[in-house]
Structure formats: structure tokens, C-alpha cells
Image 1 (tube, one colour):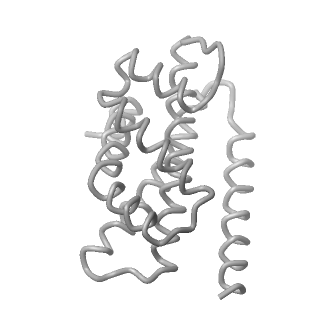
Image 2: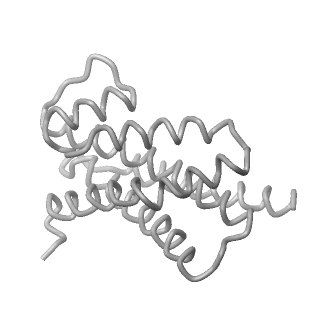
Length: 166
């Protein structure tokens, strides 16, 4: 089990290094949010795939932990995508924190449901240091019921903004 967890961390670390390389190669002509959106699309797709798998069968404890981890990094990419987009629209931030960015995204009508995003952020923060199986179950249900819909709305919004949606 420890070997598998270490193996999984190795691949996550490798993926993050790849993402950092991709972000550092951003040209001056292309807004940063477009590159962030590519990463967000992949993360959202993986999270959605994991949640859809739950309709077919009960996930193992390891799979549940993977779902929560996918949720954590999708949330991280989501608020950074919002930040990058708002900055490209010349929205200034006095302080850059996930809460401030989500609040500003709601104020500028980028998001329709700011409270769901704040709740998702709270859930992500709680799960970062909590390994209680009952809490995992509760958060996975919240992801399924509320947060996946919010992630999907953000995905659709940026498909429109990037001209990728017909």
C-alpha cells in the first residue's frame, strides 16, 4: 500500500513538473488563462470520469482518496484559471488568495454561484489535512451533488470564451 501511494505521488509530482514547464513556456501573445484552461480541462475530465465510475460500482478506499485528490487539484486549477482570466481583463487584486479571487469572479459575473465555490474551497481545505473516512464520504457526495456541477459550468464558460464550443 505504501509503495502504491509513493508510486502515485511520483506520477503526480511528474505531472506537476510538466504543467510548470508548460506554464513557463507561455508566449506573450497568448493569455495565460488559455494555458491554465488546458490544464483545467484535463483535471475536470479526470474528476468527472471518477465520479461517473461511481455510478457503475462502489469505489475502493484508495479510489475514494484519488477522487478527493482529483477534487483538490481541480479546485486549485479552477481558482487560478479565474485569477488568470480576470487579470487578462485588467481586474486588479489587492491580495491574491482563493477566496478573494472567487469573490471577485462572482462580483464580475464570471461565476453565478459564489457560495458553492466558497463551499468547495472550504471542503478542499478541510480535506488537505483530514483522513477521516466518514469525511471522505461526505465530501465525495458533495462533489457529486454540488461541486461537479460548478466545475462543469466553469468548463462550459471557458469553452465559450476560448471559442472551442460550437
